[in-house]
Image (cartoon, rainbow, N blue to C red; front, side, top):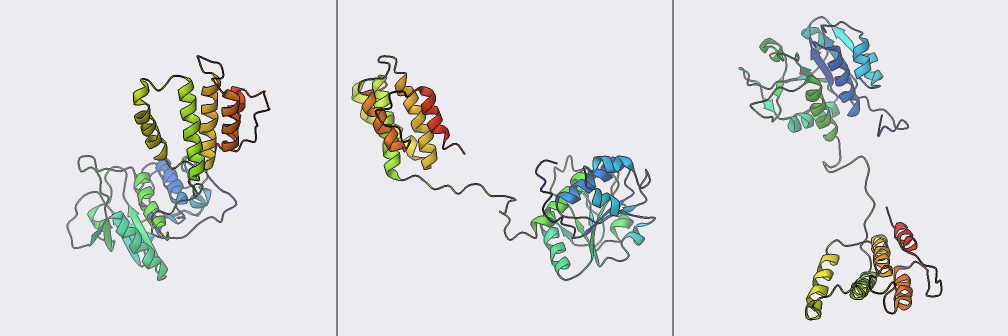
Length: 297
């Protein structure tokens, strides 16, 4: 599977996922996959319609075989939750009774706290078509419901399991902004490099007759500087841009290399750190693009 690191230790902890009379084996398989994505491994099935084990469930589990192989089947819901200390029931509609109702974020944190205290917990999910019966909700300690479109509140059972599994894993992170991997550390380039880019660009545009009428050149230059100082370019990004500008300068429509090209090119190369001097004589647009490519992350 894309993104799977098989050298990592497989997470297999947390609440049991209990499916009450699931109607389609394919949905069970997708539930197993969602569980495996977020470190859950204990799947309990109450009277599955298509029987168990089931090849269709394994096929749609997408290699979450450890969940499928360990799944347990129970004849009744009371048997399925008999050894648990605390149980949430998921539902999309209001129920009569006096049970506390939580959102998924709060429920995930509550499950994490009980897990840390050594309690065995579970989450009930009902049938694809009608969900949980009132009597089945009555066997749970609390209710968890999702903030969904009230005019279209029904969730696929695998989607519902995915949401709760995600909240379970998120509740164990040091920060809710944690991610599986980090991007590169971005360090803005020194101002000297940025000023070199400004000079290079201004000279290239001047050679191409960009600043028209001449009286407006100061304002046009100010605008260009304002645009180019906004992103906070890195040194590598400035090298890429210098390569682009060098290509534009090389193909000046009025003069193939523009007035004073060798001197400008040599200075641009020094400032960009490419190591090419004025005496190379063989520079080409492809060379400029290649220099820029060195900084392409």
